Amino acid sequence: MYPNTRLRRTRQADWSRRLVRENALSVNDLIWSVVVSDTADPVEPVAAMPGVERLSLAALAKAAKEAQALGIPAMAIFPHIDPAKKDDAGSEALNADGLVPNAIRTIKDAAPDLGVICDVALDPFTTHGHDGILQGDRIANDETVERLIEQALVQADAGCDVVAPSDMMDGRIGAIREALEGEGHHDTMILSYAAKYASGFYGPYREAIGSAAALKGDKQTYQMDPSNRDECLREVELDIAEGADMVMVKPGLPYLDIVRALSDTFPVPVYAFQVSGEYAMIEAAAANGWIDGDRVMMESLLAFKRAGAAGVITYFARRAAMKLAG
Ligand code: PBG
Image (cartoon, rainbow, N blue to C red; front, side, top):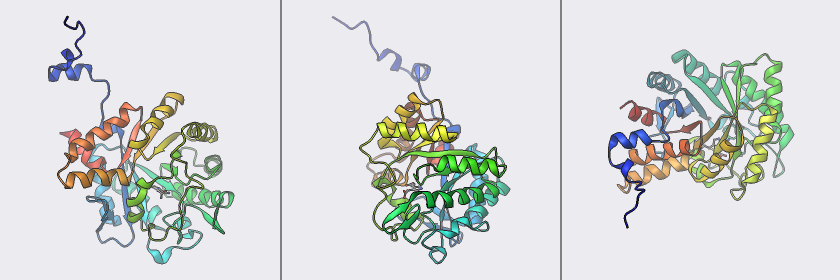
């Protein structure tokens, strides 16, 4: 009348819980997403993301040193561009002396062992806030890819280690790979935002980079429909065939099923992006005393590992690395 199998036996002590633990988060899993700005002096708060600041290049150098000291493998940088420098075509994205190339050089100077990842997309640079070139009310795919190639080359020339196309145009991975090879950037990696959904969770990010007010319409003609799962398998299959070294799922926590599907299906490192809205939700609830912020932060990061992710892009990276260091 008593159960032979009692799953509580192995849960009874710290030592036995540690012994049967299946997944663990390590500092090696963390990619720190940071926002840089050419107007911050030295930092500007982002209202919808308490604890996240837009960084000047000097503040970025300091953050990069900290990241390296903590053992965080890489930083992903997102630019807040002076509105005066934006135009319809996002021309500032191609400026070899622009904010992003300078941020790459700043990080490489301050923390040579830290990997640098850059978004390839036009939205921080366009007056209309879309990731590509607008023709009428459509984003022109192939014309946009031509610009993205140039943008990726500018980043690689500045020393970026990983270019991460987040625009969701068709064919851009192959086009960027070919251009990188052609210019001798054989070792520049491509992290494709392969499964990027048209999501409401990006709201605070658009405030952080200053594209929220500008954005006309939405991004449903290029980002994926949150209803779809099979379609992301096709996206990833194509991106791998076109030369992606790694792929990403975005947003993160509401899309753990997608992380699991991709990590089960493809022998390629799969990353998850714990996006701005996920960060904001945790911080807002913690600020109200409704949840334990640090505990939920660590639990949410561990969930990505359990789902099969090779790592997580997160605004929490520094805080999580400090906790892991004890
Ligand atoms: C767009 C881009 C987005 C994010 C990174 N690059 C969102 C968008 O489509 O507007 C979101 C990051 C976040 O929410 O933290 N190129």
